[in-house]
Length: 293
Image (cartoon, rainbow, N blue to C red; front, side):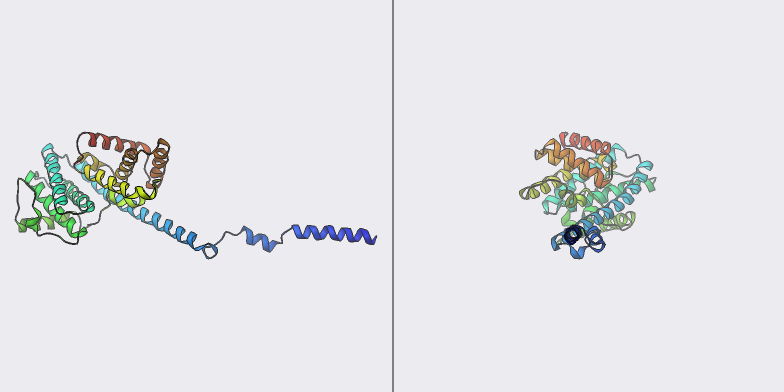
């Protein structure tokens, strides 16, 4: 009997060793808080939170601006003359931007101002806009964008360095600047395709040596497309995603990487594949037709 009791006691001891008490189980089931995570994981988690927070802010801001532009589109039937004048004005902006070695952000911002001004002015005024007014607005928009982005900004007269059919006095440009600011409601930092570039780079499977190449090609494509007025219909996020796919194809990314990136872009930037595909095809056509200055 004593021997049997000893064996039973040994079996129970083994079972106790194999089992966990309730306190231990609750500790295992509880997820680790940031206080218990390694520091590099905590920093990564914080970076991702910040990234998605900024994307949410950009998309909300984009939605507000695009809704306003869409309303203007419904009211405005832009004439061929004005669209042609806009194209010439954009080419002038790009030439002056290059001459003064301004950044790509300055050129993109100035054309954004110009498009908002043209649509807003046309939707509020019965008076037809003339080509010289478009050029004057272009000078004012470039001047305003340079003041926002650049450290050193030339004088208004010196800004008009490239050949143009019109040359304006500084006072005329200053008056147009005030009119542009008024029509823009003094909102000088709109969302553009370049606003998404740093976020998109993190979604593309790039090697360390490819980041600079991707950024340069991305900016070049965006600048090349500024003169195509048809792209104004698309949200900056859609344009940036379509440009990303165009650059990835140029850099010989495989089809599997392209499809994966396309799905991720549509999911994170919140638009459907059909809209992205339509914008991508328009970009291909635009660049093939010579809008790659």
